[in-house]
Length: 253
Image 1: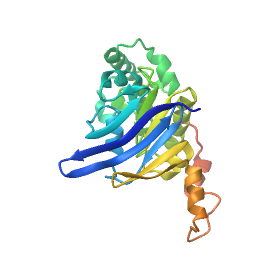
Image 2 (image 1 turned 90 degrees about the horizontal axis):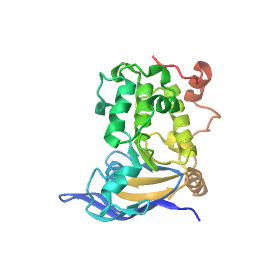
Image 3 (image 1 turned 135 degrees about the vertical axis):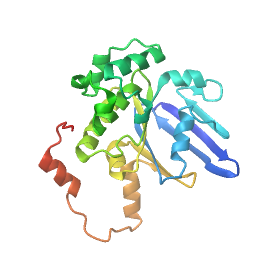
Image 4 (image 1 turned 180 degrees about the vertical axis):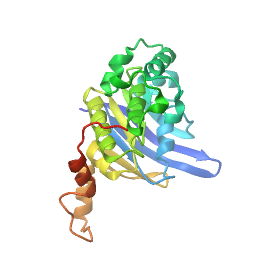
């Protein structure tokens, strides 16, 4: 039987009279990529921040790797990795210096070059963070989530603003991290991204989960309901054309 590494039960979050999260429940299976999807203001980021121990819940129960969020938040922090926004880095430090800094904060002994190898940034080890391209910054951001060797990492819209090549290379990185045994929780506004990466997704709207299944199952359910696209679906799209013509190899500005 699959092991549940995250269990969320009847989770609520209120801000005064406004209820952002309205009693949602879901489980995340160890080793899967689980997507939280929804429009802006749906409650997905609030849910993510509660699991990350960054925001207090109003009520409900959250258990992560057997640890209750109410009684063991500090223990949970030790086993999760949270992707920082790019504004969270000292722009004038190079990558080795940044990894050394964060390693000290985590009290972990980490080889910076080994970590940079995992995200294909060894050649940028002496580059300052502010000098890197968007794709390089995002790969480094993901690298920092791995410093404390977490069981679970949380990625909040990791490919926003990236070009198609950088997006697809980041997909490869995310899948590689999962294949090494790490559970990944991801939010994204790109449905093609969720369809490619996620084993299962929860779609949240107005603070409630309105669907939860694998992307394939959700698509099949929609088709079985009689849904038809207004025009014929082509075998490829413009992004496929772009990648085919320009290549998928890492090319950074």
